[in-house]
Image (cartoon, rainbow, N blue to C red; front, side, top):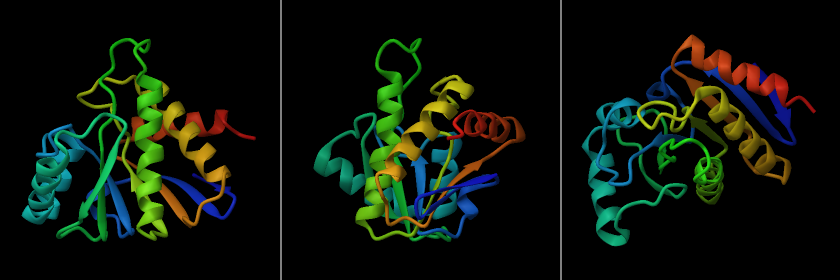
Length: 181
């Protein structure tokens, strides 16, 4: 499923984010940037030690990455050129700023991609694994944030959501259908 937003193609696909040949992949990181489970662990494993080495340098310089922020490292052995690490919110019921933090994670990642001169970026579903964000709500927030950013004008040619399972892809497809202009 795809939609054109200005000059940018927004695409939803089922797949493995570690196999995406794009300029940048986004990592759903934890604040320590030291790797973990889910998408974070998969990116660190597939990309190799160069990613962790750069993460350690970033943490030494800035400390832990705050939820909603985004930083960039090499992609190591991944087919992408860069990894944009962002931290989504831990779900605590939705009344503690979770939607705003999740939105920021997507927008700050897009800004890093644009600063790098990227033409393509691939996102996972941020915060819907171990952080417990309800999938349907996360898909809506993610797509609203990305579409609003792209509508302001972006040099990105493609923003791809790479979703690991059929149920996650279906949730994003439903959210995108509901956001039709």
